[in-house]
Each structure stands twice: as C-alpha cells, then as structure tokens.
Length: 343
Image 1 (cartoon, rainbow, N blue to C red):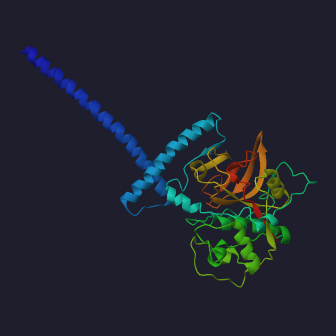
Image 2 (spheres, rainbow, N blue to C red):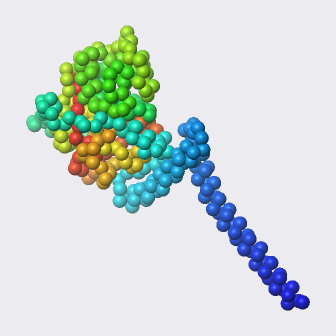
C-alpha cells in the first residue's frame, strides 16, 4: 500500500513538473509573439498608421517583421566591416513590393542613344581639376528634403532640385519650386513615372513655374493652374552627362551644381538605408527605377561617395540623404542618366 502511494505521488510530482515546463514553454513562445506584436504596434503608433482590416494589417506586419530579420543580418555585417552601411526601420519598412514599385516608377524605354540626346552631351572642362570635396548644401544651393508620398514622381523632384540649384546660381536667390505644378500641368507621366529631361523641356516651353509655398504638393495629379506669383525661369535646354563617366559627373557636380540622376533603387538595402556608404552587389546600371539629386561628393579614407538627396522625407536615410559609393563601376547606374538644365 505504501509502495503504491509512493508510485502515485512520484507520477503526480512528475506531472506537475511537466505541466510547469509546458506552461513555461508556452509563456516563452508567447513572449516572442507578444514582443513582435508590441514592436509592430509601437511602429504603427509612432507613425500614426492604422490599417483598414486584419488581412491588410497582417500582410503589413509580416513585411515589417521579415525586414527586421534582414536588418539584423546586414547590421551584423556592418559591425564586422563586411559592408559600409547600415539599414534600419523607417516609415516605409512595412510597404509591399507593389507599393515600393510605385515609389520607383521612373520612365521605361529611355532614349539614351537617340540623335537628340547625343547632341545634348555635356563636355567636361579638360583644363580644370575638381576639388576633392563638394557639398552644395553648405553653399545654400539646396532646398529642404521633400516628400513625394505614394506617387511615382521622383523624376519631378530630381529635375526641380537641379533647376533650383541653377536658378540660385544665376540669380543668387534660392526658391523652393512647386513639384505639384509640374505634376498637374505636364500633361503626361504623372504619378506613373516619367523622365527628368521632359520636365526641363516642359519648363523651357512654359518659361515659368510656381513657388512651392503657393502651390503645395499633395501627391496626386489635380487641376493645372498657375498663380500670380509664379517664377519666370528661362530654361534654354539641358545637358546630359556622358554615360557611365563618373569623372565627368564629378566635374559637373563641382563646376555646375546639383545634378539629377537615376539609379536602380529596387532593393531592400536602399529602401531601408540609414547611414554609411551604400552599395548593392545586385544592382543594375541599366534597369533604372528612381530619380534623385546629387548635391556633392567626398571620400572617407579610401571609400569615395556621392552625397545624394532623396524625396522620401527626412524620416528616410540620413535625414533624407544617402551616401552612394563612387568610383565603383557606376554603382546602381548613378552615372547612366545624369543631367541638368541650362538656365
């Protein structure tokens, strides 16, 4: 009888211990799930984002969590100095590939080699050596970082940025010009992507553009209008920088001013860039997707870089900017389609 009682007591204690172990494992698993939920919820709170239904919320959450795993791998490589840049959570870390593509809607079938474009090739001065470092922000040639919103209008922001630089170079006055004015009035392209040089051509015909403060950006095509305070700008044409020539591009940035460029930006390392000198081994120099503005260049030891202004707000990158590897075989096509307006 005593033996039977001891056996029953043994199994009872074993059961209790096993139950506690199982509960502990469940609690441990739930901790990670709750931690993910808290992190995701905090992300939404910080950005004041709410999704219309549970399905969309779960899709967004999965992209967010998967991106965090990629960030961890990249940043461990950064710590080991295997890569030169860091990536981190930002306001578009939950975007789906379709939504990211909407931000990267640069024009397809770009006429790189037609006769008109060959005539417009800029010839860099052979007798002038560019300085080792240039940053047009320090000279007051660059307006604050803007936000294209969920509209494929990067080509407008890049071309307007270059035009703003050329306008102050000629007049001594920095004016933030209206991207919405171009988006509404150019008559084609719109939020589905376009070509930077078409913006220069359009302003050349119109000879004026509104100020941003009078014609603010809303991120979608609306009714075309001009205010009484539009700026008269006599654009004579534009120049293309010789294709794949980073030395010519360097001279253009040094001697001309901010230059509009287009890159292959369809990479998670770009979308979630935080700081450092960005490069992407899977980049193309021909399949370009996103227009930006080079505002300078420099070097960090043996690592050369371009200083590039994006149009995804100051929440992205290094306060809205990215440092892209320079003299690395035309990294991501940065020297494939560079241009500036003649003012």
